[in-house]
Amino acid sequence: MNVRLFWIFGILQSLSLGVIIFLVFRSLNMIKGESIIGLDTQIVLCVCFPLFLLLVEWLIYNKK
Image (cartoon, rainbow, N blue to C red; front, side):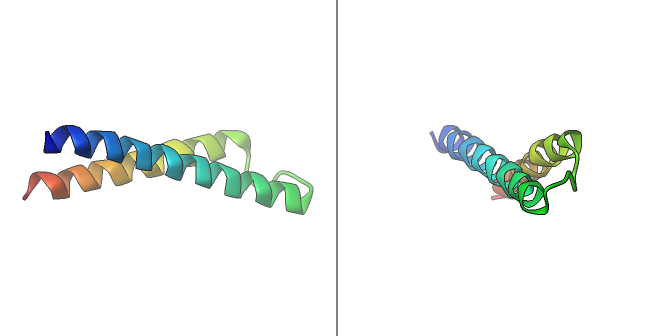
């Protein structure tokens, strides 16, 4: 049961973090008026950073 809850809330946390990162970069591009960070870089950062965070949290959770 605990593992299932970890995965549910871990995935929800990673998805929300990815959306927040994407919105921050998008708003920075809108403020500047030109593309500071490309869309491909935004997508890579929005996927890789939350995925890495979920992996680290899983490793910490597994050691308990």
